[in-house]
Length: 393
Image 1 (cartoon, rainbow, N blue to C red):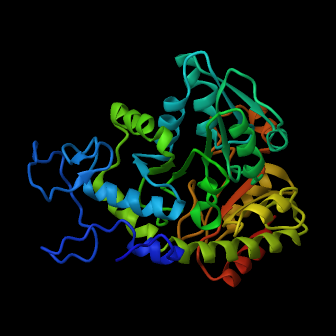
Image 2 (spheres, rainbow, N blue to C red):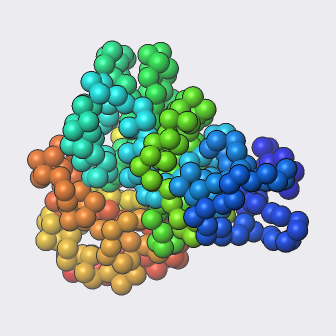
């Protein structure tokens, strides 16, 4: 395939990064399940590891299958290079630790994914790094940064309350203060928004979710600006955060259909959100595609789609939410998200269970908040299933 820079999203998803060797005639990138490679490799035709510009030597440093996925992802995200990880949390950990330093501070927001909150509020403290949490609305209107801040960290769409970060404004403040901006864009994917277009230095994902898309891998991935690439990739090497080539092969296969899947996820998310908005037993619906969302204007300005994640509060709190979920026939009651199958969960029992109730409420996470990940099923079937489940509440 020729130059793909001007190609469309789905064309890049299918063809970018594919490692094809005419000596074999392979159509897709093979799985290099190697721990080690020839060293030195003196072949003039040796493939080069992007992390160091030399032939591949050891898979903890780099691997052809892994690199193929990274190049495909980077083409979609808009960075020159990508870095994959053994999980989303390892992508987050490596990025923060590569940029922060003892005595410095990370500025972030309330309402993050629970494990990210625990990492920033507890783990990095042991390394001499602090974190300050402010409300998303404060972050979206921030007009300056204090001198001890070394990183600003946000999510494009908050997990699970679905507030939207104004990346255009936040990144401008970061640039004015020469502070790197790290963005977790798991909920949005590069199909709905590319944070690099707004100045993000690092965009990361739990590739376990929409990138893989089939609930069968644990992986992370990040697009990293050239300025910070070496620091992040060295952190991955030192901590051993490299994914397995088989996992990466599955992630690459999933990535090829990301555009097709996200179109359906977006459609189903909107239809479910509109249905829930008219349901009398629902107290509040959180979805940036709804005009009633306080973040609709920001989402409409920055995003090309609103995603497949919908959160809502049911009247009656935790007991009513549990009763509703038990009656559902199609969605599986399970943590995680972004798969072709619909999933539903209570953050208080899963993604944010490690936080105290006080911490959750401060982030807008009530005991009865339900998080729904719309799959690619027929929306009429999902709505009918929701209707019969609400009859039990």
